[in-house]
Picture 1: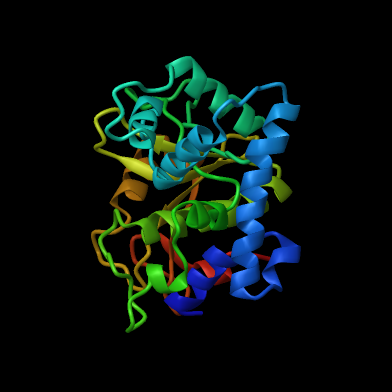
Picture 2: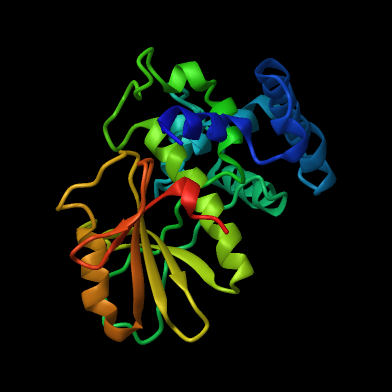
Amino acid sequence: MALPDYVEEIVASGFPAMRVLSRRARRFQLDSYLRNAVEHDVPEQGLAVRRPEAMMAWLRAYASASSSTASYSQILDAATPGHSEKPARATAESYRQVLASLWLLDPVQAWAPAGSPMARLGQAPKHHLADPALAARLLGLDVDALLGGDGHPLRPESGSMLGMLFESLTTLCVRVAAQAAETEVAHLRTRNGDHEVDLVIVRPDGGVVGVEVKLAGAVGATDGKHLRWLREQVGPRFIDGLIVTTGPMAYRRPDGLGVVPLALLGP
């Protein structure tokens, strides 16, 4: 698999009935899924939504914060640019709670290991929708929008939307495998941002696997520094460290970290 194949996976969604549809029909179904959730499923959960478009705007802002730890006040501000009268924070919090109860939002919680020598760990969750295709639809991004004509991302920097959606796709895949293995998935970020590990898989016995996600097909010597830091912090509890990429092969680096294409990360 190459980068365009991963982009197709992002927009194809994990909904089995949608994957077989044409791109146009799939877009229609994803839009309908989101609209029905806001207009019908949310009221059935007991939340009266007087302005469904306001909740959709909040969802779009949440989608734009995929794979980040943006605060909910920042998400609310992004949902109402230029508006002097914004929804109350209590309203936005009710949006978050009901959408999470419907499994539209599926954030990764921050890792808080008991008795850990690591100090000053951040507590903010990392934002993800239940499927990266939902985020892509909310943002109006299809394959052509995410890729340039030469098959490379339009914004190759690490903070690009494509990179964030690729991390969401990786997170979804890791969570499926982790659930089957009866392990927990979290993320790690120090409060000052010095160190960040995209995913931390924790076994019941305390063993830890760290995962960093890279949109690039190749990794450099400096990649994986946060995994090496985590290995130093947790000592023998560190089972393995993986750098997940869009590259063509899996291999073990001299520093002990594994490099694994996402396509090879499943059973």
